[in-house]
Image 1 (cartoon, one colour):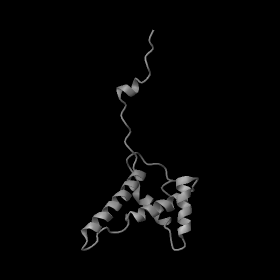
Image 2 (cartoon, helix red, strand yellow; image 1 turned 30 degrees about the vertical axis):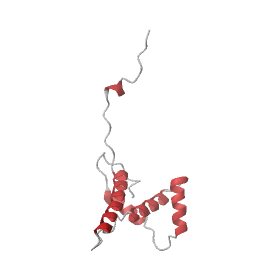
Image 3 (spheres, rainbow, N blue to C red; image 1 turned 90 degrees about the horizontal axis):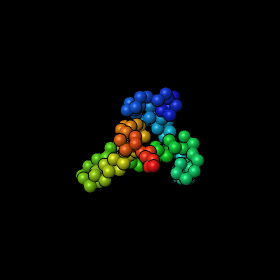
Image 4 (cartoon, one colour; image 1 turned 90 degrees about the vertical axis):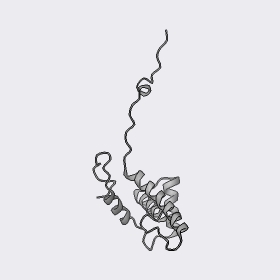
Length: 119
């Protein structure tokens, strides 16, 4: 079962292991060409895409962000900082996908949004 097909967990309790397992299964492999990648990205961002295409695009983005590789570049601190910046973007994408936001508290203005009738 994948992370999209599982029964939802309570808010704030993500399942990163299942998420990474699904991403590993969507791994690109050797037969995944540049043309395949272009078609997947266009389907995801400009048209109708399948869940498999979405997972492949996400995997590619997280790979580009060095989420699964070390960021250190021995002897070159500037390259290490650059790679760490790439990884930060990947972590933000991952956290956004894997965590539910806290519900916003109702304010008095939100409760009383209906305009009062004047007579």
